[in-house]
Amino acid sequence: MSTDDDGRSGDEYEVTVALHGAIAAFVGLLVTIVWAATGAGYFWPVWVWFGVLLTVVVHALGRRGVDVLEGRMRPLSFHVEVTVFLVAVELVVWALSGGGYFWPIWPLTALGALLGVHALIVNRQLLPSLRERELTERVDVLTRTRRGALDVQAAELRRIERDLHDGAQARLVALSMQLGRAEERLEDRPEVAELVRQARGEAGAAIKELRDLARGIAPPVLADRGLVAAVEALGQRSAVPVEVDARIARRLPPVVETAAYFVVAEALTNVAKHAPSASARVTLAERDDTLVVEVADDGPGGAAETPRAPGASATGLNGLRNRVEALDGQLRVTSPEGVGTAIRAELPCGL
Amino acid sequence: MRVVIAEDNALLREGLVALLREREIEVVAQAEDGEGLLRIVEGHKPDLAIVDVRLPPSFTDEGVRAAIEARRRHPELAILILSQYVEPVYTSELLASGDGGIGYLLKERVGEVRTFVDALERVAGGGTALDREVVAELVRGRHESERGGALGGLTPREREALELMAEGKTNAAIARAMVVTPGAVEKHVSNIFAKLDLPATDDDHRRVLAVLAFLGAGEA
Picture 1 (cartoon, chains in turn blue, brown):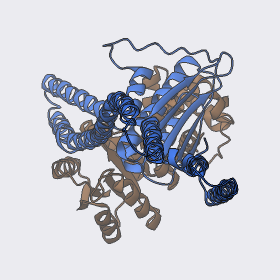
Picture 2 (tube, rainbow over the protein chains, first blue to last red):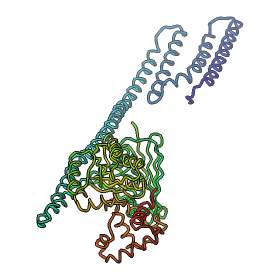
Picture 3 (cartoon, rainbow over the protein chains, first blue to last red):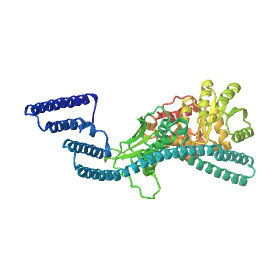
Picture 4 (cartoon, each protein chain N blue to C red):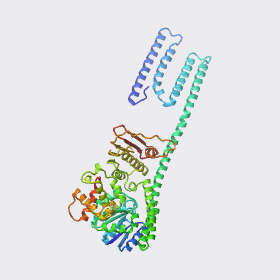
């Protein structure tokens, strides 16, 4: 049954119902004349009127009546309509046949019982639907709060990086300067100067460790210049030739920029490792509020992603997948033999 | 040598000033942000500016931007960038801002006082001083297919000599690092100059040009 009820088809429907009504009226008139011509008597045409009118009512209710409700409630509403109709018919028949013993009580009871059973069944089916609604709401809330948590986490990590830079790192640098100055003044005591030099070496090692830590959180150029500049820097630094095609005009949320950055970094590392003689192409584009990141190489292909073992630490591609999926994104790896490997991540940018 | 310093961290700024004064390098003015740097360069006309990458108010790459702007206004100004991290993008931008007189060192190198002061003097004299980690990062991005041209014609030993030259090392220092005689280094260096087709002007300038050719290759 068609449910597209635009104005025109609705009008056409009403015209056919009106035509039907006119024919019914004509038939009713005709039988009344026949009744009069055959000498009146028992007014049987009332039954003809009834029968013909019934067809008109069915026609008029027909489509409109059934289209009232959609979804799970539809069969039940149809059932209700049919029941009401049958009840009306029985009552009219009872009235037309001159009242008396109220026999319709039996079919009415049966129809009522049938409708009751149907309603019970539908109600049971509707229960999971309520639960479904609750779950949908819950998922919405979780999606929002998870994204919020990730944003907070990204902001926190950047704050930690900044604090490291201005705090511990700066103090260690100052320490290293002072040790350097001390070393200069100990020229006449080389064994002490050597001790100081070693101390400076330790300070230098600590500075380097902190620097590597900070870079692992988010490379400064990403915060300073944004995703495109950071990805171009990755391309320049890569051991394979990299072409970058970036079409992003705005700064994206930090958590998205960071995820996209690490996708490209990891993918380029993989290219350098597994296809050192290949060249790579990085594409960044924003489509419908989704950042699409693709890193494709023209290497040998045939790369197999190791399945994620439960409880295993998230490294490499699996780590990337976790990062991307946490943002409701998708990560796909295609690596046909002899064609090359492509890693594609889609990251929703907004909520 | 007259030097200005732009560094927002008081601890580091004071340490740096004390260290330079001990080496009898005159620190004529200090600034805490990019605007301040431009002001003191304008006011004091120093030979060299020592600039921290991260400066207020943005705490991103304010220092690099200010240094490039200062250099645009005063092309003779030598610039030594000090940073807590290696960022080749900034190095490339700085190198593009002029012909030499550029340095980019990690802050902890200041502790190697003699090497640091050598680097300062070299940069003030129009040379380059790039941190070995900066060079390593830049070199990592250079590969046969991309390098192409004249640089592709260098032997591995010549490339190694050029990398060391990029750090600002003298021939003697390069010889020590490569464990060869100074004569062998001179031969490498003259081969590099010939292969890069650099004009026979003064040696220092050719070194700078060779390093620029090396670091500039393959830049987007």
